[in-house]
Every structure is written in structure tokens, then in C-alpha cells.
Image 1 (cartoon, rainbow, N blue to C red):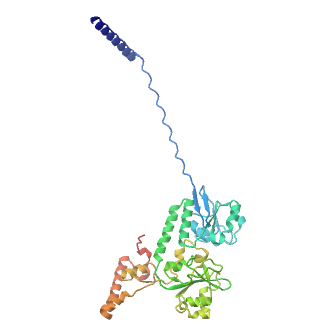
Image 2: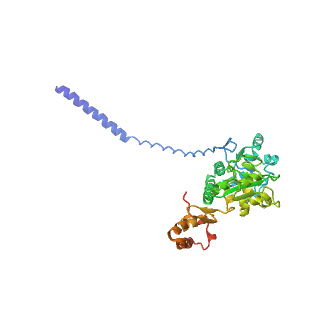
Image 3: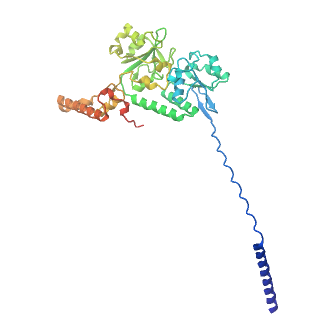
Length: 396
């Protein structure tokens, strides 16, 4: 037993000696050099965003772009105005594209109906803009020559805003396009009315035939926007102008509109249709002629270059009378600020008349007058002609 204990103690002592020697050797040895720090990896550049835009044009075709077009030729007034409204610019135009001003300074390819293909192809544009209704035939020919073609149209307000938005996407100028679209929509809301009068929008061809704009046409939007009743509603599309119906003398007499808007395609000094229509003997019986409600519309905005200036086309061409819902002086101010020429209403005076006779009516009218004067002072307006849309705040 004692012998076994002695052997174990000896082994423990021997092990402790080995450990001590190892530590001493480790401490006495030369220090090893610290490992050199590895260089941090250089940051890699973020991959550039891939440009890839596809839109559907007015001919129903998908048009794809892998880069932003730098050289754009626009051979339609409608397309040109949409392009600039979306924040773009052109290198070529058709002869009728004279808006905005900078477009009017561009070289042209001749008529939109018969452009110089040689000039167009020679410019080698990245994109050619055409109008779908009148220029669709140019698309396959230009594409066969290696040009990219996109068609637009402006038959409705939705068309106008859609293609401005598409062009904004293509040009990466969506903010500019959105601002223009919002401006169009806001201004349209401002001129919308509930005018209950009826209207015919007439145009004549070279043979002096008369055509009326149907509600489905861009020009027919005038009546729709103003809330008027279009007497051409339900008539078949006929004649050289899409969206127009051929009107005989008898048909116009039967329609007997309250207002007639005329468009004259022929350039001045050709007589305006608003003048010649009053000289047609049977038409002397028309209400619009008897009440002097004949308005000559701007043929450029309504027919030749429909597009972003639709609000300017509607503008103050017609005398808008706001009726219905006029119960306070502030209601009158709002209507007049939105462009109405007058306000009318029954309850304005009928309740007062029933309650207190003439004295009641006089008191009610004085109250309206007092409200108008007080609120105009608060708005900083000294006369009715000072009232405009800037006095109002719209909630969209």
C-alpha cells in the first residue's frame, strides 16, 4: 500500500516538472509576429437600374423601350401637345404643330396628312409619334424603315391623360406628366356645370353639308362637361369627321337647340360658319338664332389639335347659367368664380314670397346682396369680374 502511494506521488511530481519546463520554454521563446490584417474588400458599385418600359399605344400595340428616346419626331398636333405636356421635346414636327411656342420653331415634315417620309427617315428619330385616327396608315410603313412608332389619340379626357402619363413613363418625367394631368382634371372640375340647355355643335365640309358632334366625340365633350343636352345624341356616325353625324336642314329644325356652337375648318378669310348659318332662311326660326346664342369655336382646339388644352377649348365660349342648389350668397360666389355668367333659382324667392309677400322677397334679395358684398370683401374682390378659380379651394 505504502509502495503504491510512493509511486503515485513520484509520478505527480514528475508531471509537474514537465509542465513547469513547458511554461518556461514558452515564456523564454521569441514572440511571434502578429498576423498582418487583411485588407477590407472594396465596396462594389450598386448595379444601375435597368430601363425597361412597355406601353400600349392607341392602335392596341405594345411598344417596348430599353432606353429613353432622345430624338422624337411628332407629326400630329395632338401628339406634339401631349409630348410637351409630359415634359418632353421634339426634333421634328408637322406643319400644324404650332403649340407650345418652342414646337413652332422646329423644322417640319409638311402636312400631317402627307408628311415628307424622306425628311422623317433622314432624321433617324428614336421615336415617331402619330395620331391613331388619321395617321394609322403610316405606322407599318415607318416601322418597315426601322423606325419605332407610337400612336396616341384624344377622343376622350381619359385618352388625353392616359397618353400624357405613358409619355411621362417613357421619358422618366412622370412627375411633370402627373402635374399636368392634375391641372387638367382640376380645371375641368372647375368648369363643370349643370346647364340644362340643349346644344348642337356643327361643322361644315367643302360641300356645305352640316355635321353635328356626337357625345362620343372629343368635341362633344363640351356639352358633357357643361352638363348640357347634346341634340346629336343617338345619331349614327356619318361623314368625313369621325364622331359626327350628318344633319339635314329638317333634322336641325327638329332639334331646335338653345345654343349652337359652330366650327369652321377653312382658314380665314373664308367666312365663319357662325355667320353663314344665320343667313339660311329656314334657320331663322331656331331658338339659338333668335336668342343670339351662336358661338364660333376654335377649330384648332376642337378639331385639328384635340388634347391637353381641352379646358381652354371649353373655356368661356358659352354663357353658363348655374341653376339648382343656389340657396346662399356664397353659392353664387362659388358659381361665378367657376365661370358661370349668371345664377338662377326658384327657392331664392319663392319661400320668402309665400311667407311675407313682396316684403319677404325684398328682404331675401337684400340678404343675398349683403352676403355677396361681405364675402367679396373678405376675398379681396371689388367687382364681379374679379371672381375666378383662384378664389376657391378644391377638395379632391
